[in-house]
Image 1 (spheres, rainbow, N blue to C red):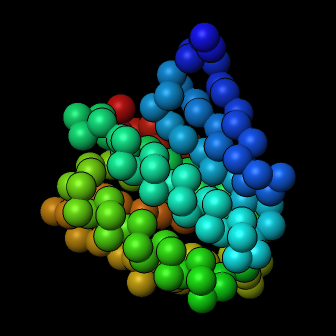
Image 2: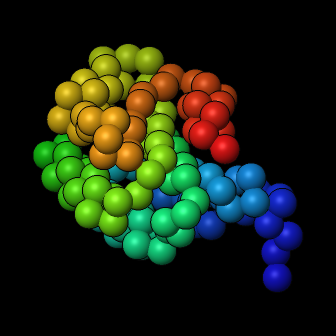
Amino acid sequence: MTDESHPTLDYISDHVTLEWLDNHHIAVFTILVNNRQNVKIWADKTETIIGAWALDKPYAVLHDVQRAILSPYAQQRAIKLLRIMQKRKLRGRYAVLVADNVFGQAIAAFVNFTLRTRPEEGIHGQCFTSREAGLAWLREQF
């Protein structure tokens, strides 16, 4: 059994990891290569996490996509994940860590406009170019 007060890192594939922080209160996905296969692995695992998330616990997930580009398949899966979060009536935040370049700006525009939610929906997403800033924002809700 792992001591949950320490971060744990799971290699879901060679290019997708899941790290748990703060006693399993924050999940951090890192996608190193975003071809269709790895996007599917990331999205399927995220869907599992959403389905298992305790409804009385603030949702807190950081998606590190600094090395990713915005593919139509990734957009489709992200929209589906947001709909699942809304259907489950999760409350909380998700942070998206993007590169400080044109690819990151494209992802940020997608998150800010296509995945935009209303406060009463309970789930709010925001983009960051710093892991520390994204994690600090997620931690504000605890």
